Length: 532
Ligand SMILES: Cc1cc2nc3c(=O)[nH]c(=O)nc-3n(C[C@H](O)[C@H](O)[C@H](O)COP(=O)(O)OP(=O)(O)OC[C@H]3O[C@@H](n4cnc5c(N)ncnc54)[C@H](O)[C@@H]3O)c2cc1C
Image 1 (cartoon, helix red, strand yellow):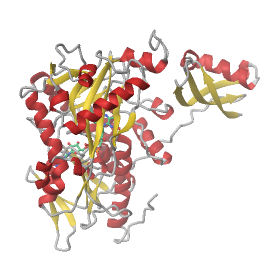
Image 2 (cartoon, helix red, strand yellow):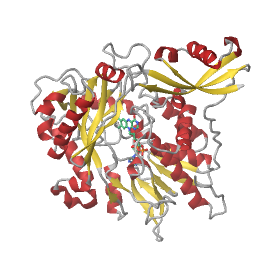
Image 3 (cartoon, rainbow, N blue to C red):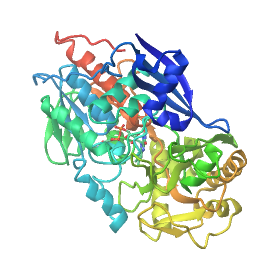
């Protein structure tokens, strides 16, 4: 008999499968030898009460041998013939998952990526911290794997479509991610593992007959007389023909400008802006696990999540990275913007998260209104330039201790930090836009009351965090997913304004591929793919 059972055990028991088997045998009232094996299929930590517990869902094999049953069955990718092709611009999660789905549906993807392959990209990413040099085509945002490659690789999402989420996690697992991502309530891959997984995905695309072109920035769309996109032009001088999935992410400001100049309609949308907040991880462990001694041997680095409303705007923690590091994530020279990532072990001394304030288009200062629908993007860009200037035209970011920020005091000394490009004391309380700094101040006071020890001068704020979501929406038909005015163009992923984060961008990539195949190839008597 195979039986699924819920358990609630202490962290040490959860850590050892033998100990879990003991609990299962006892709970089921059976002799230990009748239990031939136990597989953990769901795991979450419950730290709400003083005693931290782990909730497990397990599959118990009673009186029958354990099966090597898949939690999510792998997908069989077949070689495509090449008589039907589609262009995928951008090899981030949106683009890669779109390409893999096109292959499943029998269409050859031609992936065009402005940056380098994920391994060569590593050197350019390191050069930002070491030499303060930002390559506009190869950085933390651009290059194979997109913004997701050197990210934290947190794979939780607010998407309610469990089936779609499981499918995406399954594909990551199939390409080398640990089985834990299928089990944990808050799955996480880690920046050390992601590049290898992305490389495996690229190899699937190539092995199945797709094409991947690096250092091939798209700078124009080919539009026919019926106002339909039929291909793209690249800075290399090459042109590629086919319907286009545009998955260029939310940092590609030149792409928004290109669409704007071509008269392709977009809508402005709000973003969130603030700082990266970095604490020593042990402070967060003490707060979340209610123990002065920290997390012990069997609990992972603790996470947190804060959200509130201050003066009619949301203020919240964003992209929290336990045991992580803060990274310089600018995608153009002359700009400074920070983000966070963590390795698979989440073993660094620090914990960081974005602490951001909702910014609506009308909140943007008046001097940006001349840019019309591009005003939020230009405001975001100007803030990153200001941050760079405040850092003495370098990537050595401005920082302020948390309590000093709240009390409006300068910080003479900045404690050690994970930020490899270096930090210097800076009056973030004075130079951040006031509508952001005053809300952050109020929110930090509140969060400090909610979590004793959180508001502390052992924590620092590093400026500035702006790349929280897309500043524009490239409007598309809600069902057919092509651009609202221009057929043949499928705005996709985070840059299109329809996703946020790795998993939702990947889900959107798959949906765009399905919509494209349905619209572009069914009329030629190919097949109809049913949209989910
Ligand atoms: C440091 C960091 C950490 C993050 N951590 C997490 C996390 O833990 N969990 C999470 O869910 N999300 C995280 N994110 C956000 C996540 O990475 C994005 O939400 C996700 O990558 C968006 O996917 P996308 O495919 O839509 O766009 P992107 O990943 O931005 O990919 C866009 C791709 O298009 C390419 N491109 C742009 N313009 C052109 C052009 N003109 N021609 C050709 N190619 C072009 C870019 O080079 C890039 O590869 C993080 C982001 C960063 C920067």
